[in-house]
Amino acid sequence: MPRGFWRLHRLFTGRRLPVTIYGVASALARNPEQVAAMTEAGWDIASHGLKWIDHRDMPEEVERARIAEAISLHTAVVGAPPRGWYTGRCSLNTVRLTAETGAFDWISDTYDDDLPYWIEAGARDQLVIPYTLEANDMRFATAPGYTDGEQFFTYLRDSFDTLYAEGSAGRAKMFSIGLHCRLIGRPGKIAGLVRFLDHAQRHEGVWFATRSQIAAHWAAVHPHRRIERPSQMSRERFIERFGASMNIRPGWPPAPMRLNSAPPMTAPRAWPAPSPVLSGPRRPQTGCRFSRPTPTLPENSPQRGASPPKAAPNRPLPRWMR
Image (cartoon, rainbow, N blue to C red; front, side, top):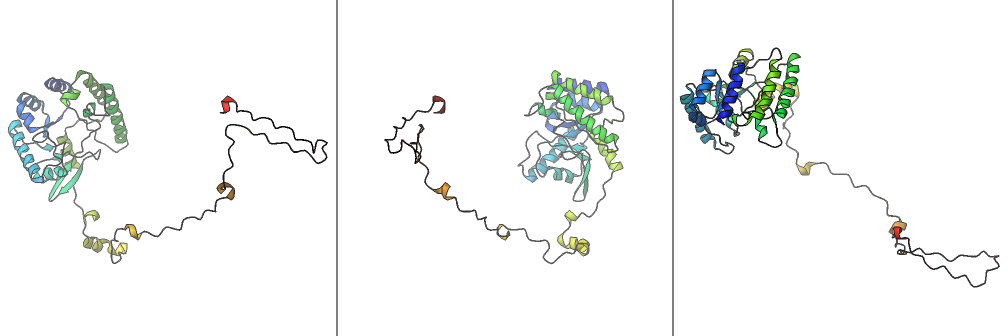
């Protein structure tokens, strides 16, 4: 949505706020005017892949070739190679493949933390700056998601306030917000973003930074230090280093438990035999009528020996009891 791009361009340049752009290389090639405006504004233009396609089942060699092609086309269109990468619809290999290129200061195909962190890809120490799918206007297009700008503002404000409080307590955090021109660029939705920027800019000590600025800061202040991790050791190396202190037994590690190796279950509880009253034949039902028994006279009754009185006829049940 071109109009959405220019609406966002005016918003961020007017407030002098830096922005990181995820640019699909083939889309950047088709929009030179927008690329020129982003470059003039000094925005950080990262790569969003060659095309907006799903890489989930893409063979590793094909994805590696697509990454190289995206870098080449991005460099030709923007005038500089991308310093960051975010595929979005990635595969299980994407993070490793982009790290192995050695071309990126940061990659963002993870969503698992509020702070950057390092990974080791062979000899490469790669910085990862996690992205977000929650503080993201894409939820305007998914269910359950946002339906208006006020809901978007509320979620951004609450997330910011929580992280700001943690930072004030000495545990600084990073807050990423995902925006798309075709979504947040709509008039009714961008109003929520404007309210959030007003809210955030009223707080002291908030750093509005591009992802490349964050990467440079993290590399300078928190450089990666390689250590020998127990989870990555071979069995022999683990025993060599920790065996004496952990009293490793022969046959360690133990074999996984099989279903037939479980201890036998105890015998089921022996319940008492059913009562003969409950197990005997049921009393015959009288249907829907009451039966009145014949009265019995005492031994000294003057009426004893006379003909017994006629029993009263059975009476039907009232209608409400039927």
